Image (cartoon, rainbow, N blue to C red):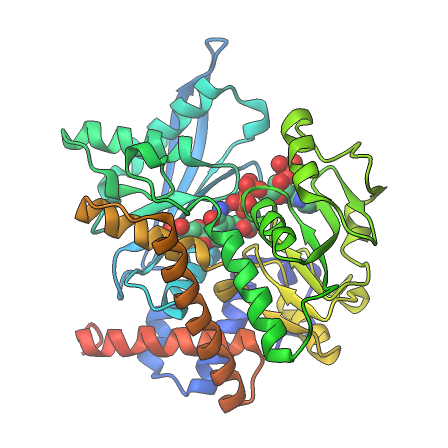
Length: 422
Ligand SMILES: NC(=O)C1=CN([C@@H]2O[C@H](COP(=O)(O)OP(=O)(O)OC[C@H]3O[C@@H](n4cnc5c(N)ncnc54)[C@H](OP(=O)(O)O)[C@@H]3O)[C@@H](O)[C@H]2O)C=CC1
Ligand SMILES: O=C(O)CCC(=O)C(=O)O
């Protein structure tokens, strides 16, 4: 699918998205007009805005909001804060949201946002001012029926509360459904914070069932111990999986007999890092990923599994908690090694599915018990897993291409039905 390309091209997320999209579209014999429509985002907003820093200086920040498709409903997707954010990355993430929402069959299109900034170097006050000004800059393009942001890397429920408040100030009334992932007190949904991690666990359970592998003694390695990674780790640990490795930004941990995740969560809470945790051996993060295990869960960032390390992955199952952790070239290597891959647009779809529930609850003004959220979430995710493996078997393609085919089929059908392409 993607051979003889430079590493720079290999790790460009937009190229990675496009390679999979084109391959799946060809397999589907997609209408050439719809192919063109879906090959590029429908809207890309770039804003440069000033913010006064704590020391009185003015800084100018750059932010993006990309809306890939709104054919199936309002745009949906998180906002990330990172010094490495690029337009190509946000473009790719926005289109992955289109495919993800279609895979789980929820009524949203795809969008994503990002602000180039380093949250490690910013105070709470600076983060609040950046968030409020960024929201004001994109305010004409977001809204409950237009585009509904959510948390992503380095943003959280506090960030969402600031966005909701800024939007509401402009609208002269409280509009909770403009963002999801809010604190429960102001229209958030029970179960949203851990939903992506819970979805990752559902994918682990379903993969073991599908492959007829036992859960007992199942060894798991996880990269990233933020929202997705730590919630997945905790839920898997509580459900009998053995977490043998954790790889974080600043270093990793390994213990072949299993890491007590409750202890590790307490340790990180107290120390702000997993480094120095006594009940596991310290190991460089890149090495942690290469350990023998049944399940590997990258839950941090893009381009973690590339042509440089894919041949050394020893896991039998790869569950992509992060968006875009595997390059298209690495896909081919993993396929040769017969590693069962649950692709990002399915594996981490628990978050946006719970966000859908939050949006519904805000609009209804009626809030569900956590057990209802969990039950509905798990049902949707199990169905989506079934749909993807059914496509994979029927079309003789890997799970990633199957997920793209399923999603493209659904989006294309809607476009035809609406007559946008008439
Ligand atoms: N939050 C959500 O609901 C969803 C998130 N995702 C995706 O999941 C991934 C993680 O998001 P989320 O958990 O929300 O983000 P967070 O910011 O909460 O956590 C990210 C974690 O990854 C760590 N990290 C960053 N870079 C590296 C690296 N190179 N090696 C090892 N660890 C690293 C961070 O460490 P440190 O804190 O030290 O920087 C942090 O612990 C992203 O790809 C995101 O797009 C997908 C669906 C939904
Ligand atoms: O919860 C959401 O709306 C989107 C989460 C997200 O950004 C993602 O799934 O990548």
